[in-house]
Image 1 (cartoon, rainbow over the protein chains, first blue to last red):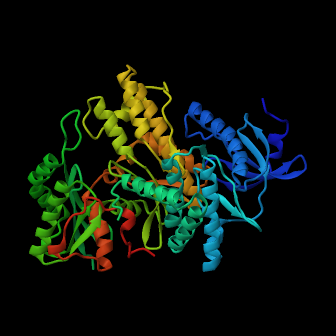
Image 2: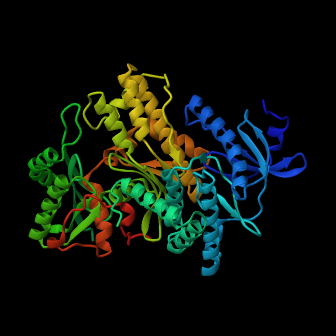
Amino acid sequence: MSTYPGVTEHSEGRLLYRGAEADVVLGDWQGLEAVFKIRRPLTYRLQVLDEAIRRQRTVHEAEMIHLAKKAGVASPFLYNVDIQSSTLVMQFVRGVRVKDLVASLSDNQLDGAFFEFGQDVARLHRFGIMHGDLTTANVVKNDTRLVFIDFGLSIRTTRLEDHAVDLRLIKETLVGAHPDISAKALDALNRGYASVVGPARSLAVLKQLQNIERRGRYARVT
Amino acid sequence: MRRYILGVESTAHTFSVSVMSSDGNILSNTKSVYMPPEGSGIHPFEASQSHLAAAPKVVADALANSRVPMSELCAVAYAMGPGLGPCLRVGAVVARTIASSLEVPLVPVNHAVGHIELGCLLTGSKDPVVLLVSGGHTMILAYSAKRWRVLGESLDLTLGQLLDQFGRHHGLASPCGGAIEEAAAASSNYLRLPYSVKGNDVSFSGLLTTSKLLLDGGRSFSDVSYSIQETAFAMVAEVTERALAFTGKKEVMIVGGVAANRRLSGMLSNMVERHSAVVTMTPLEYSGDCGAQIAWTGWLAHTCGVQIPVPESKVLQSWRLDRVDIPWRN
């Protein structure tokens, strides 16, 4: 049992963000400023299903946050895992979400940011990690680098298909939510990605991405 | 002055014609629905023959019920796609014929955009996250910069296909959603099924395979129906919630044939509470395929000068809705 006293009290801090599956609360952990990621019960789901999903994702996310660092990608420091309340306690990363950043970037800065984004994704993939949730809301830019903050849907995998699914989600988010900069951002991202995994692997992943898009309904990939 | 438009829908099992006025009143909405034999899905050619046979009466009834003289129609809209080729062609022929004989513009409409725009008209939704769930689509969308943008979708089967293919495996005829909902209501025995959310997207193929295997292994249709609904709908609710959280919007609008399922709409109503958002739904009569979705979207397009010359008025079996320009929205 990994329940420490105090998780619940301290998690009554300021709500930073209400995500789809978790509340992100800023609070205090043993004197440290900390973020509490609390996967509260979702009552629209059947209880047995909901509990299994929350427990599995909480434990798994903790492992993945740790592994990302081994891969050379910045992630928050983890302070505590509380399975009972499916809560992770971790470092509060100061910075701006890429989602909120893109509109204010010059062409050069945009290119730099997404080149780095591509490099980091490639580092995860090279290490056998699929992030699983690569939207622009889940990456924070601090003073020096990008920090990946949400590993709730990450898995260990070296399959081409899984890595391509990762890139597909970035593409979907960019085209869907940032249509005006998506072409430039994707170009920079792909170059950054290729600079780490090499052109052959990068091409193979992009080809698989096309295959996935072709499987989609009514898709005509040209 | 009120002006009138006629819309023709024939993308799949439904052949439907509607006359609408420029102020958004549905003056008529007549339809004929092709019913496949038990254990089967839609046979495209058989469906098209059914549409062909029904077309004259459906058109005549739509005009008669609307009390609008044909000479007052200022445009004719048709579903150019996406859908089943033979079915689409029947609607296109009917629409071309009427437009040519009246010498009024022919307006091509994307069927899926039709679901959304009719939904916005009937629910009054202004800026929703749209959940489009039908036999042809499972997509989460929001409008931005002249397109309906896809924020999440199924990577393989649609929700309608999942339910239909499972139902047909049990010997039912498509559409099977109603029978599955009824069977599910009789069970509370949850069997664990694959829950596959990949970022903003879902995948139903593993869920379908496992469900069929459970049925073949002797589990009751009712238990598996219950489990398939609970799993698939929770996946859809989760990715819809992700889109809601990501965009910060305050409305979720459900459109498409599967919107009729009460468990699905119940889950979504529960989900939006955490975000102080609301769920709106197209009235059941218009949530499935109907002429009104084509007539109304055709009217919106017509006001922006969208039309297609008859010789070029082909049909598009594959026509993703995020490729359609939406000039009538800001």
